[in-house]
Amino acid sequence: MQFFYIYKPLAHPELDNYVSPFSIEERLMHVAEAKRRLGTSVSWLADTMDNAYHEMVGKTPNSEFVLDADGNIVARRAWSDPEALRADMERLVGAVEKPTAVADLDLPAQPPIPTVAKGIVPRVPKPEGALPMEIEPQTGSTDIPFYAKLRAEGTPELFQTGKGTMYLGFHLDPLYRVHWNNETDPVEFRIDAPDGVSVDPAHGAGVEPVEPADADPREFLVEVDGQPGDTLGLRVQYFACDDALTFCIPVRQDYRVHLKRDENHDWSIRTAPDGSVDLSLPGGGTMRRATGSPPPQDGD
Image: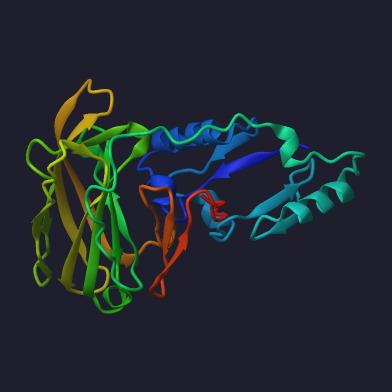
């Protein structure tokens, strides 16, 4: 049998501080990081940026498929089940005398690469029930990578009526190993709303920590009064420095933000500086995973 991992949209961005990629090149960077973190020799496949595979399998979060030599699906499940997969293998190929256990693998797994200080800037509580919104990073407008990536979330009433609270979070992409330069102007955003749509505030600037550098998200809450499906223009400006201190540059990047639900992503999972995890649940409230406990199973 041949085994493949399939990279799909991140179900819960922010788990271990990873954020959703904006290009196929960045998806392949995520695949390389997953190989490094897991230490596995299993081959990976990456879904296309239009999420064709994800759509084809019904947007299942952690699905599992077994195909025969002719490409026919002979077993499937929406959530991976190792014991059921073992039974499939024994039924289709045959049992082995000594099944491989996880302890037998001795995988050379690696921890996340450390960056500058975190836990400097307090997190902004997200509105109850907030879920991701569709965004379009204007990647063609700049040759500079989106070192900081926007995550926009809206309350249920914002999707239903066009009126509600919008969360804007600018998260540094850990794969680029960059940090905020706090010795110059802070992160700043500006929203361009179409006629008939009001946004408050339409302009905002981040905090100015006393530390010269950090890697915490910059987060804002905005009240929107428009119609479902309206589109906002958003521009963000910031200074980014790489952790190796080989560059420190001003960055200006643009987005289009749609007042509609992004069906390819789910609620975010916040990783605290101590390694514990807060799961911001869509119905409100959080669950917390302590440092060192096993991570939640996920389709990321």
